Image (cartoon, rainbow, N blue to C red):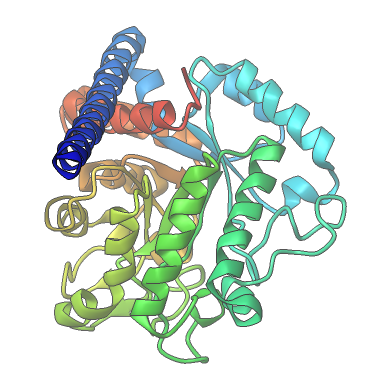
Length: 373
């Protein structure tokens, strides 16, 4: 009899635990949906209050000018990207104060970004007044301490950037190089797609936990190609090669919750023989429809020779960048781009709904990372 009572009690207890667990899961799911609804309502509110100029300005991720605060007060750009020159003669306190001042005059708080990949590409940690030593390349970090070291490095890097007032890193690099002689090799984690995918998964999740926006780059993957900073590059590899190799780390990054992807200036034949990937509707459609990415798509720098040698003018590049599907343009040509895009909207070449869809994604990202309330 005692055994029967004990069994019944255990069953009742198990049932209570199971119901409690189900209730907790249901509550969490409800809270998540409620939060999504609040974010969408907030996006509607903000969007209704914006002028066309302000909407287009949100799509511009501008190289930070000397009078960054004054420019932002007038233009209301969506983001600034900082380079080594912005840190060289500064320090932690000055940079933090400067960024706070810029955010204070922003109607909608900005994405403040930097390329802090580690290794050959470091901007802030390059200087001793910011960090005792520059961040090592993720490849070297792994070699010295395995995956736990990679996780710690991503955490440290994110905390470091957030402490300076920066909320976005144009990293991690998701490219899979072939060999040492490749342009992207020193910046790539590995020549093995599975290893790069694991690196991306760990890094993106750690960055998210620190509330730092991760940017996967350079879609659809440099592979064994040359440097688009200095010349026009044509990639004739097959789509199968991309699907079985180069796209794998990007797939993993999307699954891990990456909110931004940067597109390269390579002309990738298997997607589009005429346009650079950054200005190709085919490439953007593939990323959206075939890979299911719903976050912010941004171009690589629009002053790079790989894109400038292909198209007639900065105005034409800006308009084509929007028409092809980019949400944000990484560019030093803020005013020129804004004017050209606005003219295209007024003429009907670009629909207002196209602008709104990008601004929605940008606002969603900013709300998600609490960059705006």
